[in-house]
Amino acid sequence: MADGQGKPEGSALIPAATILLLRDGTEGLEVFMVVRHHQIDFASGALVFPGGKVDKLDMAPGVRERADGMEGLDDWEFSMRVAAIREAFEESGVLLARSEQTGSLIDAGRLKKLEHYRDPLNRGEIGIADFLAREGLRLCGDALTPFAHWITPNMMPKRFDTRFYLASAPEDHLAVHDGSESVDSVWIRPQLALQEADAGTRTIIFPTRMNVEKVGRSPNVAHAIETARKTPVVTVEPQVTKNEKGEPVLRIPAEAGYSVTDEPLSSAANVAKPKAG
View 1 (cartoon, one colour):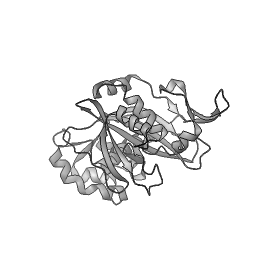
View 2 (cartoon, one colour):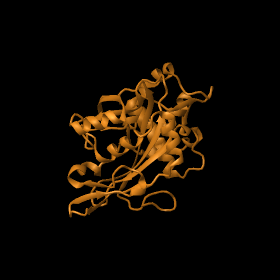
View 3 (cartoon, rainbow, N blue to C red):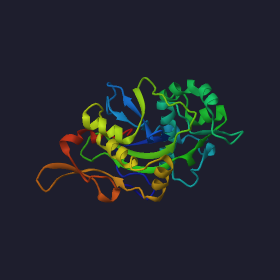
View 4 (tube, helix red, strand yellow):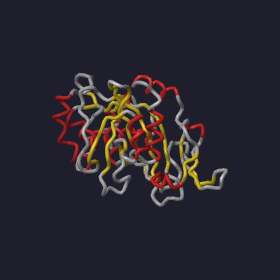
């Protein structure tokens, strides 16, 4: 699963990170989700959380000096949180960063002036360290709360090691999909997302569904984040086995705190790709 430095064993695992951006809506907790482009190899057409693979530039010199709330983290966990913030900006336009001059979270006006960085960051034309230095910004690592950790089953040829984080979305940051990797976006109540998936009007893969259901137990953002802070994250690496009826299932540990421990293999075929949700 992981070694003493926090890095998973085995070179085949691809590190990735994602954020469940949360807000309080008129009917309760809402989470921001995007619809993946149908030509993307990960979860094409599915409703997922913003996120993606860790980039080598996420650990470039200068990033640690411009990150708040991530002191003492090993390089592996640090790079995950940097990637989560960067990917959220690239895919949704929400940037969890502070002005180094004022110490305050950037507002909508400043965010709009940073919009043109989204594509260059996504293409690797500029690294996160250079972006932060150029604009006088600091990453709000203290805005992230660890929520879940999923690893692709070991029988799959392409495997992801994905960290999930919760974050309260800044009230004046307009979350908008990027138009390339994601083609639509929505603020949605977890219960509604699950209902639409059950009705067949939304596609939600197994890891995403489990985490939508889990965060949906909270009535509001404060409760969700406080609950996550008090709850240890248990790594989930689904195992292919058979249930008591002899049917093939994916089994996840009961101590991870999800509503199910067995998922029929036929309905969880896309579990192998939990890159961003």
